[in-house]
Length: 107
Image (cartoon, rainbow, N blue to C red; front, side, top):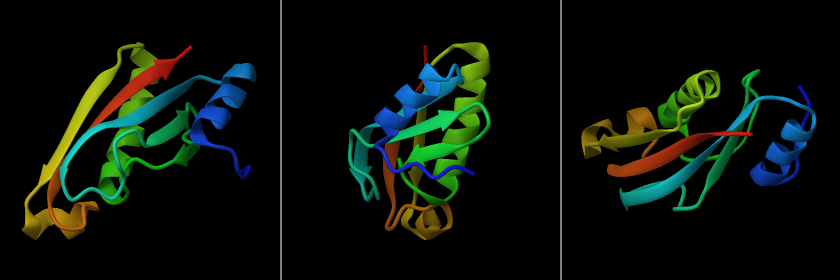
């Protein structure tokens, strides 16, 4: 697997220049604890490679799966993840909270 050292946006531009289908996930809002702030990005290609971060743990895996569907369908999605303090460590939020992530295909 190729290592990417550019920002997610730079990598996304590179993938699209190569003709690779891609999607961009962006943290659009948070409440409570969130490992990544609003405006954080995750670029994903059709092969499952990704650069950047929108959260971590199970949330990031769910965003990558949703990005695959977004690339297939062409329809963007708004994802919302919220967990109680008891569930927080299991899904990657440090002490409970809510995060909304917008996932869009990139042409």
